[in-house]
Image (tube, rainbow, N blue to C red; front, side):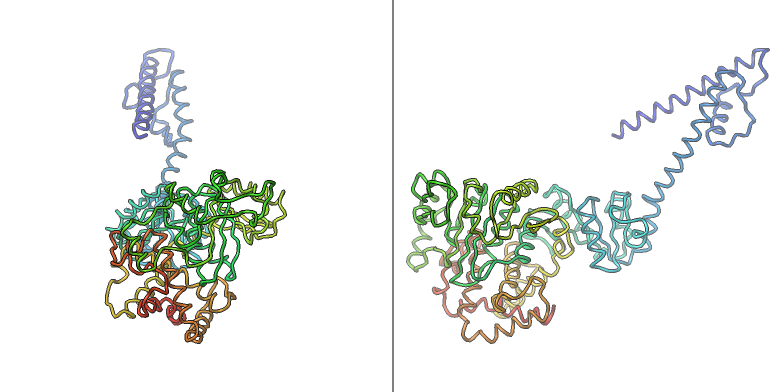
Length: 586
């Protein structure tokens, strides 16, 4: 690109000097002609002076072309002068707007908190607007851009700076880099992480939209996964029914997998719970990444091959009901193990588990069906669903599925769709304006709760470490998963009456309810937290072993609640005590 610009510049310079040479030659010949009045443009220097005076619209009149060619060239210079002035004005304004004025404004706001976006795109627009609403007095800065996005010029004067400067150049004008947060929200997940990591040396906080997670990283590096955020937001706003329900997921991909994984870890209510999940789509990657699913819920794959093997029987005529699906879970799990979809425990671990009466089996009645058949073949299954979630990667696929359901099926269950805008009979989730908010991206509240849970645990065990910044990525996620379940705990204690917008009073009421019910329901509360903890670990492919080995992902606590000692059962009481801490500090 730079070579091309230089080539164009050389062409312009060549044409300019060519015209000057032609002007000088034509005027020199006119001076020798007795028919022409004398002219003073007889050398290259006077031709250059004449062109400058003409192009800058000064027009002293001390040089005047006399030849026809000279007048044509003079007219050309006069016309070009108009474009040259406009060009020069544009350059000056561009410099003022893109560099000089932003530098002045950066200098004037150098004491404020800065939120810097490495690239100006629609995600940056949404998050920038939310940051200004949530954090009064901050400044939003778009690097490498001279546009104002959603902001009007009047609105951007005090709070938004768009500049052609790069991030490193912008940071030079900050008095306190610890008050600067830089966002990397491009499509390249790993590149966002790399650029954010490299910038930490500047002493700033870097927030990267990425799925990549190193084993250890400093608290000043915030990793934002939009898929996990979408799932967390969905289940917080639309929690599962405590009495059980049938949940149908239509569509596959990263959003669908995140929703299913979050559901299995956050929807833990008690030993008698029965949630039925029917997942339509390609969940092969999900199952390969979670080979021990059958240890936390009864898992069955429904497909044509399964039907031939006798794992289930479908009624001869469609549509059919769930009662017409006769499933043999034992044979289904065996078949899945033979196919390599669900790994078996190694022989030594299995022997240890068996000897301790800990053969891995689900502790609840939750059912997970992987439906490898087209979703619109199972009319009665859809009609008996308590909710339908359209969670394909492509919004168009979700709209198409809704259109088919709405047009052809008498569905009464609420339909949730991952689409940008909702309309009658469909509830949207996962839209960019829902995901790119200050709370979702920066996760200050969620991380603060995770830190509080870790601190309460350390106090309960009389330990001084590890502190939050010393935890590896997995243990941080473990604390965050416990924080995710707090809303579920509140609903259990308050009878499912709480909504997702919890206040200090709601947490205080839930904490008092826990203290009141603790003597009678102590074992239930402990079972719930242990089951939640086991599900999280098993979903991350930890297994039981008599001796804990973190490197091999083996833990001696991954076993039925009844097999734990009294002290082991009481180990996670802090997760319920957290309700009181939040009520004090919210």
